[in-house]
Length: 340
Length: 98
Image (cartoon, rainbow over all chains, first blue to last red; front, side, top):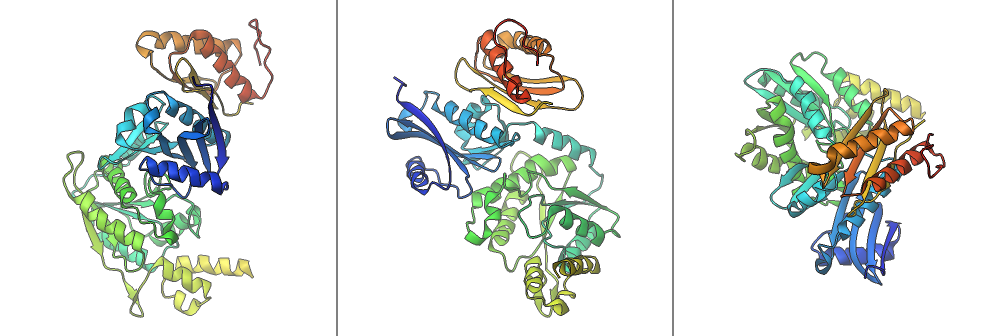
C-alpha cells in the first residue's frame, strides 16, 4: 500500500513548490522558516503527507500529516535530510522541533540540548555540547562575583571597551564570549583580535571563542535576519535558557552584563527577555543577575557598532576616530588603505 | 584517503551508517540500536570485523540501527566504506579489501 509514496528533494528557489510546503506547514501549525535551502517532501499520489527542511546545519520545519502519523514517514524525511546535509559536508547537525518529539528524534541519533517553554526543542547529532561543557569546567575560576558578557563587537568600539572595563571592575572574574557566527561585516578573527588588543590591560578576564550554543544560526536563527525584523521571542528564550542551564552553570557565572540598547529592536527585546529568563528561579540552574550598564556617549549620541559602521561607510573618519579605541582605528585605517 | 560518507536509512529493519576519518589508526564506534540490550556487542564486533577485513582504520563510525539483520549491517557498512574511498566494490566473497 506504500507503492504510491514518493520522496523528492528540491531547493528553495522553486517558489511554486515552496508555497505548497508553506500551506502544508500552516495546516500542521508550523511556521515556514525563511532560511531553508533544501526541502524534502513525501507525497502519496499527488498529496503531500510529510516534509522537512535543511537550513545550514539545522534540520527544521519537519511535519507529518496528522492522519499519517505512526507509519514511520518521519524516518524517511530525516533520512533524506541527513543525506542532503552529509553530501554538503555538514556532519554536525542540529534539529528544531517540539517537545513531544524528543524521544522520537533521540532514536534518530539526536541528543537534547534544551527545551524551552514546552514549545520548542533544540537537539544535536553529536556530543559536542558535552565536550564543550567539559572544556568550560576546566576554565572555571573561583570568586563570589563571576561576570559574563556576550558580544559580537562588529567592530570593537569604545562602548564595548567601557562595558567590559566596568564589568571587569565589578567582577572577581569576567568571562567574555565572542559570537562566532560569520554573519557580520567583520570576520570572527578580526572581531576577536580587536577585542583582545583592546582589553590587553585587564587581568581578570577570559576571552572565549563563541560556539554554536551562544547566539549562533543554530540556536538563534532570527538574530541574523534583523533586517526583516522577525523578532522571534521563542528563539531568544531558547538561546538564553541554553546560556543559563548548559553553559553558565559550568563556569559558575553569577552575573551577566549588557549595555543598554537604544537602536536595535532585536537586541533590545533580547535584553528584556534576558532579565526574565536569567534572573528567575527555574529549578534547573542557579539564577544569574542581569546588570545593564548605560552606554557611553559621544556628541550626545550613544556609541554603538552600527554607528561606527555607518560612519565608515560615509567616510566620516573625523567623527569615527572618537568612537573606537586606537587599536580598532588603526585596523580600520589599514582596511581603507587596502581599498584604495 | 578516506572521506566522509554514509549509507542506509533510519527505517525499520535498516541501519544508517556514517563514516568519518579521524587522526590516528583507531576505530571509534558510536552505536545506538533499538535492539541494543540484546545485540550491541554483536553489532560492534561485526563492524570491527568487517572493517578489519577491508583494511580500514582511523575512522569514526556512527551507527543508528533500527533492528537490521547482520548481513544488512555489513552491506551498509561496506557501502559506506566504498563511498568513503570512492572505489567500486568487488561484491561476493571476502576479498573486499580496498
